[in-house]
Length: 135
Image 1 (cartoon, rainbow, N blue to C red):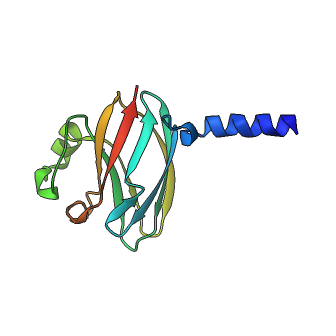
Image 2 (image 1 turned 120 degrees about the horizontal axis):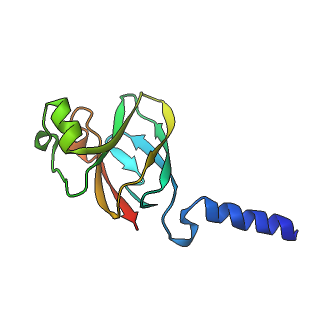
Image 3 (image 1 turned 180 degrees about the horizontal axis):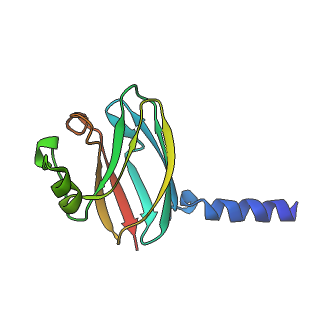
């Protein structure tokens, strides 16, 4: 019994956010016009595993904007893909309708980052989130 409790305690610590600290793994549900949950806290400069599940019948993007970049609507983003990637996007991933992906990326420096879906006008309809990166 002691070994089982020790293993459970180690697993709970390794999986992240049980004690309110920064996680190294997050789950994201992509639903019609929203991310659920809409806020995540992760550890700076760590490898982060993201489990993306699109429950909708349309594709969705999970786009982390660069530090200091916030947008109100899709019209605030450049139409030029090269400029968008160079000046606005920190990391992005697209998920097909009714699809799922597990991907990893290296977390940026400690700060607060806006997350948006750039598909169509999903962002304009509220498909945004917040990523809090703790140092």
